[in-house]
Image (cartoon, rainbow, N blue to C red; front, side, top):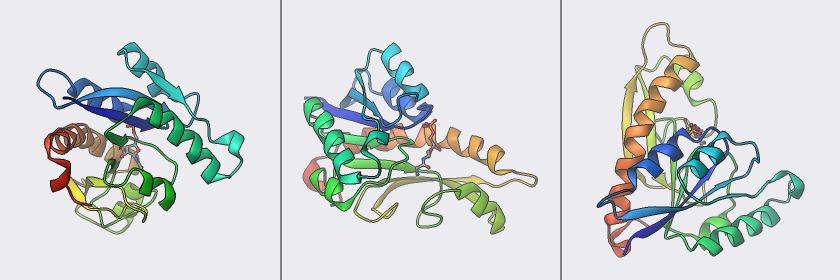
Length: 196
Ligand code: GAR
């Protein structure tokens, strides 16, 4: 039976789009829900256009009460019964309590070669450090930010004259190839053989 995938976004949702498009034919998973924490996320309309159910769990009315926001998010997810949750440009930090409820089932894409450059402004930090390469990583989400086991990585060269914008665009193209490949492999694997 196909694995059920929920995708969490905050913005344009280009990674979400590539994941949804990949889940056809003999792919072991299907998209069942796209959730955004921002009502104006561009990705919501794109998901709806592709026939994927969407939901909004706006974090702002919770006014910093992260646990209450996550309870609402959890209830929205429970209703969709996902086997796998993909964070795809989802810009809220998840608490250890939320992660524990979905342990081993949340993937994230991060625009850096982890363990380098956890957190934000990854491209500017890589350029500033004089690195030869940047890249992207898909990892399992654990209680620590951007710290779970890495499931796949793609290095991307940093070219002379790169700005964080030009580098981000080149890394994003690599993200669009990496995330669907890792999701396919993850969905096909026996859950008992996955990293915890
Ligand atoms: C992507 O580059 C993703 O790696 C990054 O946000 C962008 C979202 O683009 N995620 C993070 O920085 C997570 N900390 P998208 O909405 O077009 O997929």
